[in-house]
Image 1: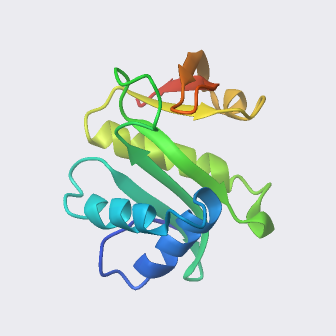
Image 2: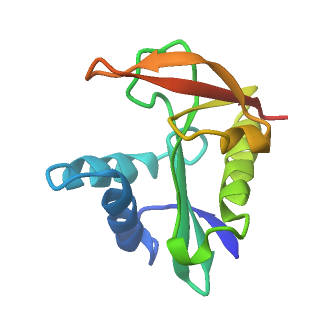
Length: 151
């Protein structure tokens, strides 16, 4: 398995847009995902970064590091988002590897912590992520914030 930070023009770029959108988008926001991902490729020396786990040239997992995950906590940055592992590969520590790769990327860019939001119970805790309160979304609901040191 290999981790690949997406670059526009990569052989897998269009497929990656489809995977991210299928897992995280809806029928009306394909252009949102594609535009975000195209513009993330302009400067790989900073965020946002979208990356994938590949096995035999097949995308088996995704994640991204972004400036804000559409929530009220604008003071926290960067955020890990879009963590996904293909059903066929779940239970094989791919999620853990995607998380660790994100921590490494954030550390390499000089960030001391990485944040994420999730409503999953006891998933991120088993990988050492700490609950850091809640964030409010644009729809008015709230969701748990997790953080982890990048070092």
